[in-house]
Image (cartoon, rainbow, N blue to C red; front, side, top):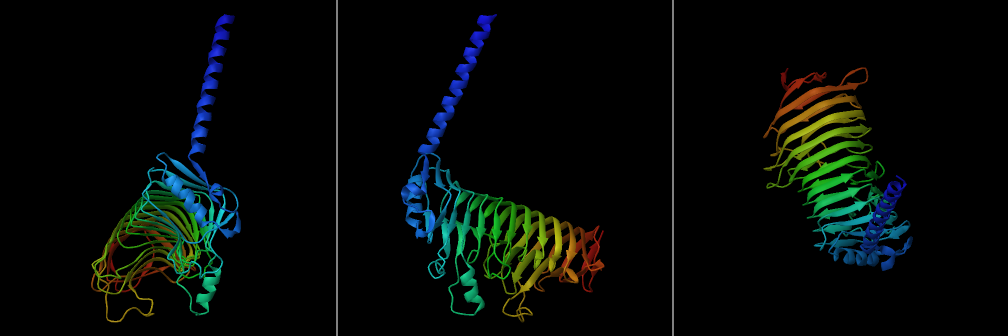
Length: 406
């Protein structure tokens, strides 16, 4: 019996040693495919431009035939405009960021470059953790003073890429848009925090355009523009568990700037909360001819807290004319739009506005369990050229609404 126990203990010890050996080899392998930006000359004090070092680490990682990690340790790293180009030999390159990346404080350095941190034609790239700081305050001040200023740059963008992950990133004070996904497929943005002051111009949180199969999940966004905006040519989007405020809400559009333009379809926005925002759920189209469309879109399980326009379809979008573009109508066709399980408070008397085009009326709109309060009563519904059905909802409709009640 003692020999049997001794043999078992020996075998168990051998198994433990083997597991530890395998784990050690795995760590060595991981280290051998890890590229620390310090090795390539990055300086973690926020005063020396580390762009070349980051590009050097990227070149090495991108050239690896195995999964690779670019490691950004704690510290502050100053970056000018950088573009990380594909195609990489590996389809798994991770930026593990434990530090802070900062843009130059002088907005003129990168303000005309379009994008600060740009990924182009990459596949299988992940950005995990970290903070990026666009230092946009001086540019916003320039714009507010109506001085001659550059347009500003997007903080982080993926163009013509696939299989993208952005997880746990904090983006703050971008000169313009914070994150852009353009012309890409299979992207996942999750657990990000985006912040810019309420009066910072054009600082959209996440913008998706000409892209498909995009998920945006579990994120907190407060900006001076749309928390999330979805541009033409986008399809199959799933947006879930978003906290928005301040900002202009979650917007489809603006659509219809071009006569020939891709539409937006198959979008679900679920579980979004809005706090003091200009809008909640919004679809906006330019009041001009276009063959664009927005269809098969669901907004569900939304909570409004003093949103100025909790639900709005605006097909008379024309910012240069406060009352809309004169003598024009949007050609964008809106259909199959579902609003369900949306409640809370409106900061204005009209909580639901369906302002559709006289040339292309909105069809197939459903309001299901939509209950919005204003002061001591129900918010009003205002509509034009909108065909819709409602059930389990309470609101005061204006005249001219084409309603089918169930």
